[in-house]
Image (cartoon, rainbow, N blue to C red):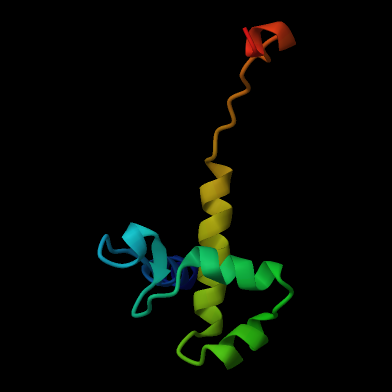
Length: 92
């Protein structure tokens, strides 16, 4: 159980925020690579191995931490549905 807690803390320490780097977007510690960029690479079809090959200063754990960060962020996302306006009100 203790090793899981240490591993969890280690993952979270890989993602940092620095207002002087990329306007404070979440980045991988020690880099200027954002979580957003990593997710875009994955979404484009790159594998973790492709990314770490193209960006050797990134480790597999960095990529996994970015994915976990995104998942946890979305888990807390709140969607608010607004009522639709009738067509005639849009152009009044």
